[in-house]
Image 1 (tube, rainbow, N blue to C red):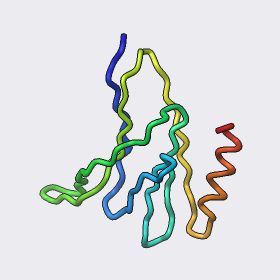
Image 2 (image 1 turned 135 degrees about the vertical axis):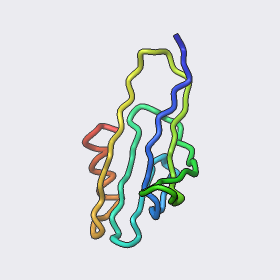
Image 3 (image 1 turned 180 degrees about the horizontal axis):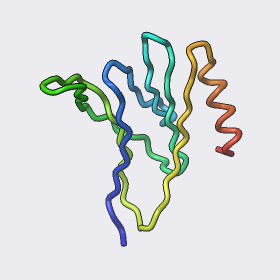
Length: 105
């Protein structure tokens, strides 16, 4: 039958997490300049950003972000994601265009 499905990706504290206008999620480490892009291959609507916390040890918590794609779908259903690591010196848009071309997006 039809179910409400939520898919979440959790990011570490200290990362700048944004949902771009094209729906691609970007998690940037400002210290190193590296980033991780998350691209949904099946879900068309962009995700929502949720504020969360991470805890490295007892009694401590730091703010972090989670992105969530939420939708109603008939099950069974399959979702696919592209996780694209980007080095500090790489051109983000060029790397993303290569991945999209490869995936036929």
